[in-house]
Image (cartoon, rainbow over all chains, first blue to last red):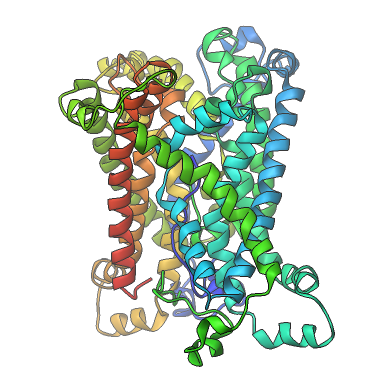
Length: 307
Length: 310
């Protein structure tokens, strides 16, 4: 599912209140009020709730390391005994993991770069020429994709991509970029409006062209926004199932989430293999998240996802 | 957050030009700006606008996706309203979206209250609670599919609970519950983060004053917290509803629309037009679906613009 922007933020830094809570303005958090100790019972309740998040992930990991005999015994919660990587090696060849992985990587990388560059380009042109009708209207035009879910245009897009030879990962990449563009333009324009015009003017006085000003001054300033935009583009693209499954016609060019369907049809009892395969497809997104959670969390409140 | 959302006339950084605006078009746009804008504009038009226009156009024809076709007026639209398959998918999708919105918002709100209160391991807990957001919907649906079909029935049999002894996904009456659970599992983090932002925007003094007045914690929650984050509640409800109407990946992974067509969502029905030979008919379906999504979005913009709460 494509991630859909939640809030249209004007004060881009406003969401920075999320994060880890260090060095912030006074918070709704009652922590500052009384010298009471933190609530142990509430902490326990929250840890118990967190189990609901952990269980499916734990099952995935433990099933993946079981032998096939142990995997079919029906107890999903037991620890692997003996510990086996047989599932991974079988999954590796059954799904042709390297190929699906490379297809996923290419689509995702293309989407991330395309979303950031095209979004920054368009946002720069729009904010600097707001007085001109074409640019002002383009802003609202490009934002309209937020109100147009993929299912609405899926059928004609399947048809058109087939017609022009884009029923492949390249076509999926372009569509992913287009569906991410609104969110990136929303964030970039909000940020660009807060950059004082004097900054650019001084660059121009020093003789920089608009092109140079963009790459040497504006684009580096956009870095924090680009991080948020890039991470959401990554997550949406890496995890998407619907679009690649419908657009790409050659099964050998399918992405990781799509190739998992073989375990629903042909190898439905090789649970250790299927879970090893699921784990290999999920892990990259979880790892990226663990390293970039600040931007993920801020991004949601600045106008993110779904997603 | 001090955002008002979607200000009607966003001001560029060069706001000074607007003030001296009258000779507006006299200032020429530097050519390179068109180069910056055009790639997005052209690609967007070809990839999104053109398909949307083509789709709406064909919804008035009898096209099967290729070959000859002719105009049939509103026949597709009229037929939709007496098609049990379509009606069932609308009933299912709206019912599912409504239930899920309530479940997701209730849980996310409570978790957000907990996660902004004085607790230990706050950062670690937040990290864990957000994980479901970054996991692929179809894959986690496969995982839950295994749990619902293989593990839960074992529990049910051991405990002697009749309806749990078989896979809930195999029951036309219960399968939707499985879909709600997995969708909620994945949608709670995003909703939760928005609520956390909302709760953090309430100044601590408000609660201090309430404490002085002797308000209980429960009263504070219902009389202060809930009204002050009502803007966030509206956003989360409408946004969630809109997202859940688009349910596809998770349903494919859990039931693939079954048993029978009991859990077939609107997007899944639309997509059958690709293989089912009723391309034009499903485009009419997509057009109606589009109008509904637009209506929900318009409501969302109206509310967020009307309130300064967010």
